[in-house]
Image (cartoon, rainbow, N blue to C red; front, side, top):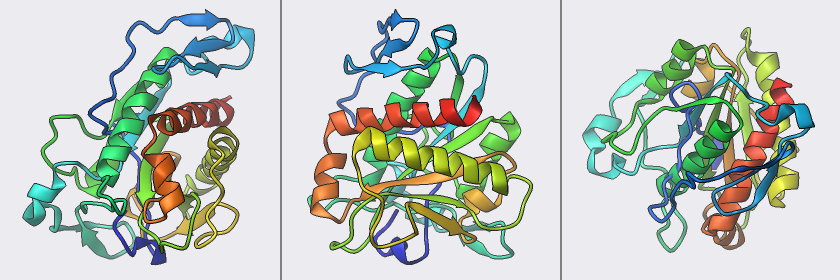
Length: 273
């Protein structure tokens, strides 16, 4: 998210029916990954991911998961397009999208979310899921936040995972998970998803819960279009504070981004079991 968003703003992580976004140009999918045993698979960096019970080597078989990488690396060149107003799902309108935030040395949120999303999609596919994203490498800008929500709705996804990085105060650190605050049929189930993500991320990455926003790593929001417009379980992960030096150092590390993706798979397995 862009700087200052920590005051009242979160971002959605969608992928066309299981949208996943990541953005590091140096990352390449390990197409040759093989199942290590009935309980693990090899991820893109050679690490193994626990898949639970031996009978669940592909625990997400057939499930549609939408991965939503926050923002778009091309948004910076399309300022007029992304500032158009769209339905926010709460009786107001908001900007189609933003350019997101960045670390103090220029590492863009959109690059971070794209990279994590690509890693996540690879792991979800290995676990048998039908992973979809809200954008592709060729998407020039956006999509708008309302269009991202529509991806998960139209796919009737089992869950939507939105990936973001926060632009909070430099003295604040940690991650938090945004969940729907408006009353809706998916509020309770989305809370369960948010808790699963919070717990798996905390143990899987070692990142602390945010000390500057939310409570115990959770943040109810009524101003986020992606959450308000969703008809399927959804949440937004603010993976860390990109304006905090320690958080930024972690988020720029490819091994941390791999741990994040693996943690999200574990969260989905727990949520959908």
